[in-house]
Image 1 (cartoon, helix red, strand yellow):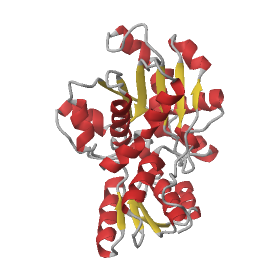
Image 2: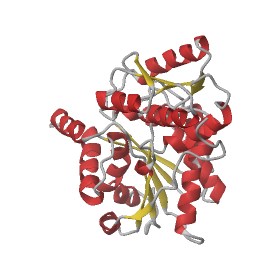
Image 3: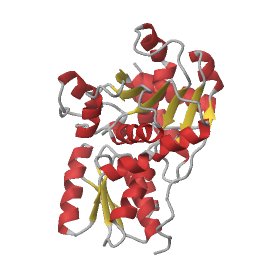
Length: 326
């Protein structure tokens, strides 16, 4: 063990005010910069917490991932002195595979989408007696992710409450963690704007169907949102009268435009999955929700979770621009 187990793996990330977004929306916009975590995304909060609780005596960990959960699992395993196997679908870029290998993980490429990779990870956990690290569907993950809201509340200071929290949804782990955090700090009345891209919209599809559904395929370029089925707990929260969750979709083009705008404004490159949340600001969705009476006018400070992402670099960005030219 080359790490004291009481030590947490995640960082307390900056909460930045974005002046141009604030000007655009007529309310202060705060960015919770999860892209600055050591693994590149918020996932390290939950996965670090999970591994501390369940993987100390492990022979090794195995995780299925479109990239970010795998990066977090590989980072945490390396710090704990454990072997890590990460199973990724074939849609995963070479960039992510290389970054996982740089963290010391063994990478296996299985199937077309995350669900295929997940089935293989579960098989390996059983046959090789490894600790299975779920990427989004586990109470310990949500407990870990909740620290993000607790930190944001501490940064904002007493008496300051957001008008809304804006985030992206893939399998629903971040959403469940944020709700956990809102409970912890007494912000359960704060609306959540939950964003997905068209073609990676399992949460929105579940809300429309009134039950958890499985998408036929992932057709969005935001492959890190690419779970075909949202976790049951996230769906249950969407049906709860105690919470306001507004589920909205943007196109891949809008998400791409958002990451380019964000790169210009904040000098930070985030992946398409994160662009889904940012697009709610840049595409004019927030004022539209206010006009529809679904968000209050005036709106209190907007807390945007910049979930980050490890599957992007300038080459990937150029390739996305080529693909999404319509």
